[in-house]
Each structure stands twice: as structure tokens, then as C-alpha cells.
Image (cartoon, rainbow, N blue to C red; front, side, top):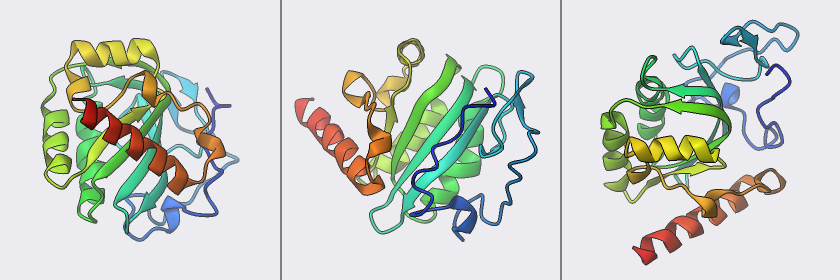
Length: 192
């Protein structure tokens, strides 16, 4: 797992350590020291701890004018034991919402498992963003993870599915990626 790095191609456009509104503002990274682990496996020092022992993240991009954030994850999303969604909601999402972020793109290609509990934090988050014309999208999550989401009704709150498997997202500029996802969300809404 230590070889899986968060995407760094957009650092010239955005760095959460330099964003005064970011929960990770001022964080200093030591890329010579591997100290964080998931189930005893070291992970790249570029990932950020937000309260979960099994799930780490990286804020890849935030646009305060267009009100969107792109977040990448690694590990195991475990609501059953660690209540990961609570840590995410309280420690990251709410800080972003205070700065009017209401569209969230969650990139989950490195999320290996999901263990659900209840859906109350997802419902709360969904209600807050949709009240402001926002949305939550899961991009590139593994099929068995989204199947588990479905078992716990999470897919009622996070747009996901085959249309949101965007394997070439790293080749896009952040705003182009956002536009593509936003168009997919609008198409999905029009179909319902």
C-alpha cells in the first residue's frame, strides 16, 4: 500500500496545505518518513488522516467560486466499527460547507472494502447539499463497494454506478473533470 500515492498532478492548481480554508492548512509533509498505517501496512506520507484508522484521504482540488471539491480516498471505509462517515462529515465536509462547498466528488478506486452501519450521516450530508443545489458523487469505486452501499441505502445519497467509472480522470484538468461529472449528474437527474 505504501506505493499508492494520492494523485499529485493538480498540485500546481491547488494544495490543501496552502489553502487557508482547508482542514489541512499548514500541514507539513515528510516524504522520507512513512508513519501512517492501515491494518499494519504503511501508506504514502501524502495521504491525510481525518479521524479514521482505516480510511485516509487527500483533498485534490477545491473551487470556492464554483462550490466544488474533489477528494480521493484510500483504505477501508468502515462505518460499522470506526464510523468513518462521521469523521469525514464532522472533520472535513462541515469545514468545507462553511465555505459554501456543496458539490463533492469522492474518488474511491483505492477504497478496498466498505462496511456499513446506518445511513444517518449520509442522509444529513445529502439533505444539506441538495438544499443548496449540490450533490455527492462517487467516482471509480469498486463494484463490491457500491454493492455494499446499496445494501445500506447509501446509493440513495451518493450518485454512483457505471456512468461514474471515469478511468481517464487523471488526464483532465480539475474543472474539466468537474464539468464531466456535473453533466453526468444532470443526465441522471433528468432520467429520474
